[in-house]
Image 1 (cartoon, rainbow, N blue to C red):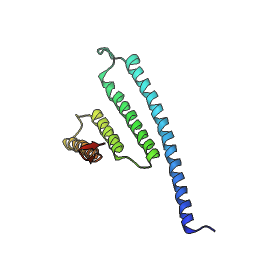
Image 2: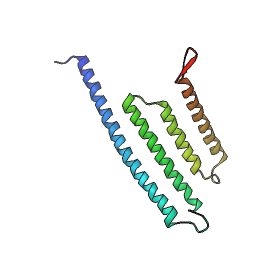
Image 3: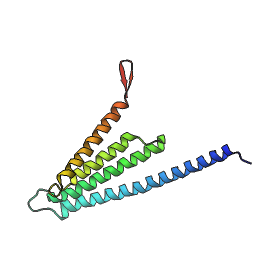
Amino acid sequence: MSTPSENKLNMNQLIEKFERFVIWAMLLLLGIVVIVSVFEFAVLIFKVIFIEPHENAIAFDINHLDSVFGLFFSILIGLELFETVKVYLKDNIFHAEIILLVAIIAVARKVVLLDYSDTEGLTMLGIGFIILSLATGYYLLKKGNRVKSGNKLIK
């Protein structure tokens, strides 16, 4: 007969195995999404340059930049999320620095793709506040990760 502490240990091991399974499944699915997105990005670039070139431009119509940059930033966000999950698998903790970087990239994507003619001033102020908050948080996190040891700073 098993003791309550053994049952608790078995339950914790079962939960840990389930978490690992879910994380590996997420990594696999995210990897598929990133691969398909890279293929889609290559098709988009090929299409913009060779199939639908603009007659007054050297390579392509400037209106296509939104879709090109949008997909590029989406792939970058996917890679950062992949890195976040990979680091979690290795260390079994989420690193706030990587999560802040993902958020900064996501906001940068929004800023690049934003239609400024349709955006209200209050929305612009909100986005500016988000950028300032994320940058401040990242700075404070990096500064807090440095530990003073005598006269030397250890990263």
